[in-house]
Image 1 (cartoon, helix red, strand yellow):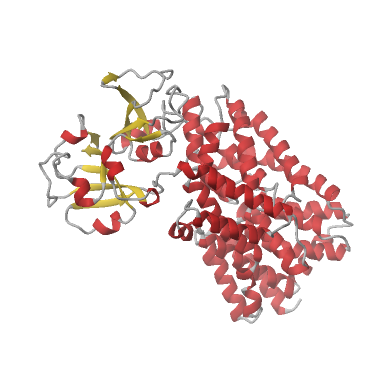
Image 2 (image 1 turned 135 degrees about the vertical axis):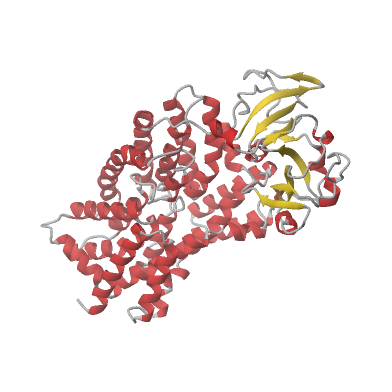
Length: 588
């Protein structure tokens, strides 16, 4: 081997080691590797930076905007509440969860699906009296399996398709992967329904932690007409939220303090909740409820400009000693007070009659600029905005879903490429007001894109220096390998990589090795490329290999061993199925 190939292999080992054993961000590690390859002359700048112009990478960036439009309108929550239903057993709940998650993950990026489903599933688990730990990991696994069904379901598929386009001028169809992906979803989903309840722990929920946080009282009203009228408290998902609980209902001046789960909701009911600050945000995501505080509706703010903010009153707050009603707080600060907490506890009585004291903590609905505008004012000792607290605009949920389905339809029909359809869909999301331009910019996950694009430099170095061919030759020296056994070896190696480094990096690094293996065997490369796609996505054994696994780690209160207990048998089932099916669809 030339020195460039040896150097590339050493650099590859160093990158893998840094990703596994250090806490340095993956984008910094891979960008550093790209810089080293350019400075040492292993790659030219044009070769090293080719990933930043790859169609797959640009498509992923564009789809972030489409997914954000669906999130801003509450479209996924809108679907979830209509499809999840009221199963009676954990296995039944898992079955009802896997189907919509798998379908949605096939039509949009699966990471976005999990991000939007987590609060809905936590709420659903509370209503069903099932531990969220029984549902959140199956949610992640179903999203991973669903994402393998189409080219746009996961960023890994788009990355490998982009490599196929740039290296071999091969374009895969939007639903071409479904011949293997759909059977994997069905078989993997069946495995989860049969065994997940037995293999996953019962780790409880968040209710027991509510006493440790600031306590607020939040009042909302049942909209009329609205989807909650005529439904029971339990059916509406209000019996037990993640961050609060329903204490009483004010029905035309009559107070109902013992709120039974089967209590029917009527138009104009005022519901009083007690809980953490996030309770207010949680309630705003439920279609059919509106703040009972009339000041909220008088704010001169569009829906997408609103968020929840906590402030602590300082000694120079001008209205100390005045009642909330007399303080003209909304006029002075263009913010509406939702609730008031004193010494960590809610203050009883009507909000308007409470007198301000220094140190009171207010929960406000205000503009997104409120925190920056008042952070250094002497009125408040502390100003902090709650993350992800903008209320969804449910009225535009059908429009956002229509844009998504139109994108899929024109791409599947061949009228436009996936990239072109994604461009139009992102533009339609912004143009129709499903998402603002500023939020569209913030929705693009730049570190993930840098990881993917800079990984291309290592892949290019492996190919150009001959390092990939050397690794492929080493794999084939294990003995006389048939194409099927070589395919299984490529799948196994990719799956091992994706458990310890990012799925996209694993795909980009294994692509040149898989290409070299197919060339040395003299067989069709497509089955090997597809094997890399599926194996790079099939991360079930650790929380590190796939973003969705890490996203449910905290909310589900999982431990590392929980992933291994269910992930190892699921990986064997999925891997065996994939290796058997791929050559039947794409022959050697």
